[in-house]
Image (cartoon, rainbow, N blue to C red; front, side, top):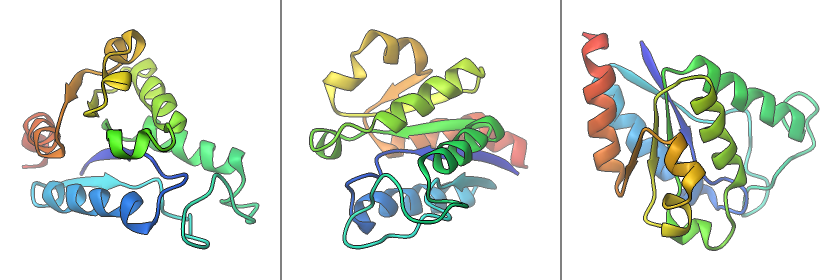
Length: 152
């Protein structure tokens, strides 16, 4: 089964902001035999918003979180980076930018979905993203077009 890493803001997000879009994209992709991989597995919500680490030496340290995310970027067939203006104006998702760069450096296809010109128009982001789109619907169409035939 082909897989897509679902990169996007987590730190500072509530449960819905961090998870709802990932669940929706995963459902659409699953119908085409493609699996969405969430970086939030092994990361519980403690309080009302996700932090940058939590007290668990196996999964909660900054090094453990980054190692798991790098493993996912390396293992997945494609990386989808979702960086909506509404969340990134509140707190820029530096981790998502790094994951985009990791994927690009490993020659993995990358899709950036953002309505935030500050991010989408940055020259390094432009050079690292294979596609820069405005909606998750457009992104899922590209993903299905690229990976869908492999799952038949």
